Image (cartoon, rainbow, N blue to C red; front, side, top):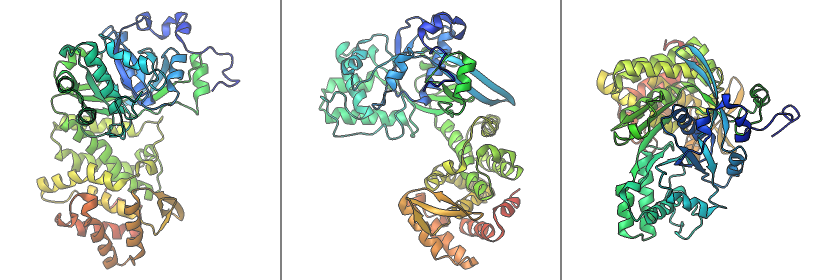
Length: 510
């Protein structure tokens, strides 16, 4: 990673900070007790959880450090330990119209342990009486049950099996003391992640025929919280790292970047707020008995705005989210969809929803994040089902009419999926004479290729294609033709897009 530009700079380390105390308070560099075990060494947890823990330590509110265990063998532990767990985090973006540019050396990670080469050290963590919290981000595919995992594996392959092994060791180390259970804070992007983690751990325990008293301890002494995480962490700033190193005065191979916004919703017992004084430290963290309304808020406003608008925006000539916010035609469409059609369907107070929506559009305008519309368009059929369709249905139930822009978004999706040729596992579309790749499940792409091949572009042909798309219960979970007026509206919008173009059709929406 070092080049001639930075060859004369020292490396970030504990020794370096001894003579640069202005970068991190001395208290955070002391040997704080290891209170957190973290599964996952990637950029997200370092730019989210570890960043918050460092903030609490700087205020003397937590006084604990993190042990990092990678979920796969990546060599990340060696990088972490080479820098004594230290790294720089740069949060940049807009907050309430103000440009935020906050750089901080994060000192919350004490060390990394590679369970693939340090298995006994990994198990030894269970013997630490100070250890209380387990955080994870092992990707959406990480919380899965694998029947092939054995208790004798060193370590087992899956995260739930590694965790089960640690829980068994914890039980034995403290003779089943109920006060020595863990608080588990999974950050994987799956619905009710804590419930799913608990389920897979118990499946693993059953597969291993663990004693009933151990299983009972796992169930009763440990708190599996459900969480919702919200922050774009952009990771290592490859294009500008040489400049950032020079500005910082040291080399940092773990330099991390993110947007300024952050939100963590934790569903669990009220006592967690005092055990983890994140709110007291000033972080945007919500402890809730039921996180459903907050999950709906994020999915339907932030994710729903993306799925409603990005395909229309792409066909209208835009490529990045930030550019969409500079285009009054696109941003106006997106904002009216959210404020007029999504927010009326949500349960939280309107003032709170309006404030969240405002923060979302401010985040979309972040000049430091280049978010490609084609990346967001991946798997849009399932995304529309989860992110937008519930708002369509509830708006219809409340207002007795269709949500105009959310419905137009479905027509734009169908237009975006226009193609007749499959190549490299993608359906090939065309915008202004240039090809783009449409990516989704192969069966979905094959269906669209067939439908568009047989569509002659006439009003009757467009209506037939629309009906074929909407009737797919395997895609939508129901036959969408049953929603009053939806087929006619989507067909009409689609015909307009095909004949008049996306820009002209969008102008009718504003």
